[in-house]
Amino acid sequence: MEDIRAIFVEEFRSRTHEIISILERGDLEKSELNDLYRHFHTLKGSSQMIGLENFGKLFHRIETIFKAVVKGKSEVDPDKLERVKNLMIHLLDVNITDDLSLSKLEKLIDYIDGRKDTIELGESEKSTDFKVNELRRTLSLVMDSLSRALAVSRETLRRMERSKVEDLVSLLGETLKLVEDSLRIIEYTKLDDFMISLKRLVDDMARREGKEIELIIEAMKLFIERKTFSAIYEPLIHIVKNSVKHGIELPEEREKLGKPRKGRITIRVEPDEKGITITVEDDGKGIDVEMLKLRAKEIGLDYDDPLELIFVPGLSTLQNEDMDGGRGIGMFAVKEALRKLRGSIKVETEKGKGTKVILFVPYTTMSEFLLVLRREKITFALPVDKIRKITFLDEMKKVEDEKVMIESSEAFNLDYKTEPRYAVILERKAILADEIIGVERYIVRRSELQDVYPNVRGWILRDRRPVPVLNLS
Image (cartoon, rainbow, N blue to C red; front, top):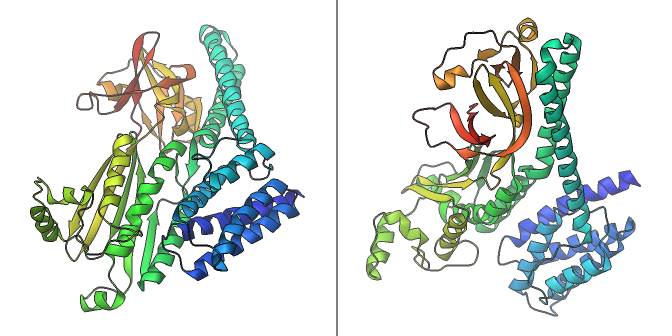
């Protein structure tokens, strides 16, 4: 039965991404509506086959919506399509192998039928949340126990046998690995599924527009915060649609311009210490800046940078806008979404060459697990997700002499007089320390002294004293 459920989960995720991709297109053709009907009919049968009766009833309700449209018994309702899309996005984060409760089923059907405005949390989703919260509690207990053990070890370290100290260091290394893996489960999600869905969206839109487009993604197998991902989902979809519909030219037009028939859209996702930067770049026609200026003049609008005009609601260089991806109200909504996240958006364009849109979204989670260390009189901290293991310095010299050994003194322009005891091993370097103080979750305050201490990315408060967090990049 477990094998059958695993197969169902794969089928569910694959069909759900396809459903979302179709619904993202806007105006749907009859063949696409028929595809949606077929997807929900299949999901209904698969759910019921493995005993997920209430999921089967939910998919049956949605199936009847598309069946009525396909058979000409009702018109397409854009609001209902949007609700179905939102629901399927929601279900991607639900433990689909646990059936819905009757109350959850009724609430979701009420949402689909417009009797509720929000998708309410129910028992199926609570089961997933319970596991995550349980993991958080377990992780906190492990961290507390380890910190107490380290506190004892600092007082007795020099009196302990080396073998016992090695066991403690080994335990710390294993615990840090547990923390790293657990953090990924709790707070991060992989971009793979979304990017696969995005590829389908581009392929489908390109086919409908009669265009040839290659989507290049430089972000696969990357983990980002779940909250950050949820926030950037809609803005990113809209910007990619703009590139497909308004940026990339038709193949014949590109050939006349001396361009390859196939247009190119590149998405780069680059996380750093402060947030995530997403760049969407196309090699299309670019934005007609002169036309923007002309439209602004017609309506008496002042501006400093003409490219800022694309964020003005209703101002567009197109004569006929549609729901699939206009540059007017849509880009205003994108900028507003980023403003609410304290993020930013920047547009660069060159007529005939293409357009680049750069989004920056700061991380929503401001706290993180840190390993606190001491070297002589200096206390400093490192993020645990960057640490591979901890070992004695002499042991590291035997087996990992290719590592670049770094003294924390380099961050503060100091000289140490004693030989360090431990090596905290990172990907390509090792930070040296005398004492392992403990692991705890801290709120990191961003450094305002980058010019003075470029190797310090922030500070934490420990025992009412500031402790620097080293910049490992």
